[in-house]
Length: 255
Image (cartoon, rainbow, N blue to C red; front, top):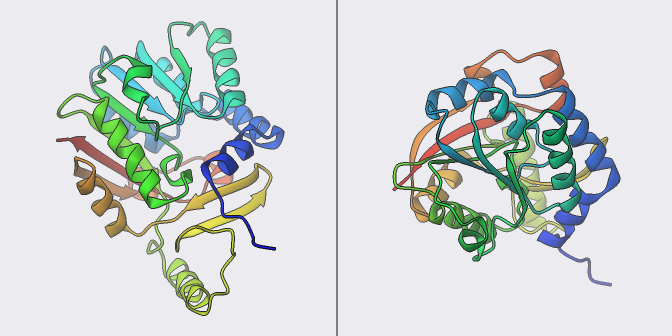
């Protein structure tokens, strides 16, 4: 029997699963913005009156963090209905009802019509872009975000990095050998993919190298402005380290 490949429907179902909903809702209520996130948001989004878009908002951790920093024109969306419901509940609890939440898919060609605005900046945090299976689909998401942003608008997002440490490089050399022998997890779509289960439920993640992201930005109308590993930007709390691994932050601007 042929093993089915991971699809966007797989990922959506995983995010709507109870384990994932509880995990991300707890983070939204208790963790808030990371120090590195706040540092880069304040650096690249200095205008608190700007209309910002958050793609892949999940249960609202970053969305409400933006609100608490004083941003008042925020539109946020996610393709997991259960997480959007949690984000809306958190916003109501914190008197942030002016935030606009929508259920939407970043790869949808109708996204500009659905959102109805042109934004001064966009965010796609906590590796959300990398949880879209298939490089063509990730490029489609970057293309759609390009379409809904104004010229010069910044896009802030994160990824893992296959070359970030000696350990990672060794692990991925071993993984490359498995792919060469045809022994990789048959559910995976491309080299760099992982699919695993932990306390957050089942998680798909694509781990790129730096050149892959630079190429994807150039192919979708974005110009690279900044990138650095999280540890180079700020010293995070133990709670952040417990919640998330090291990642690379990226800032690009709409051409």
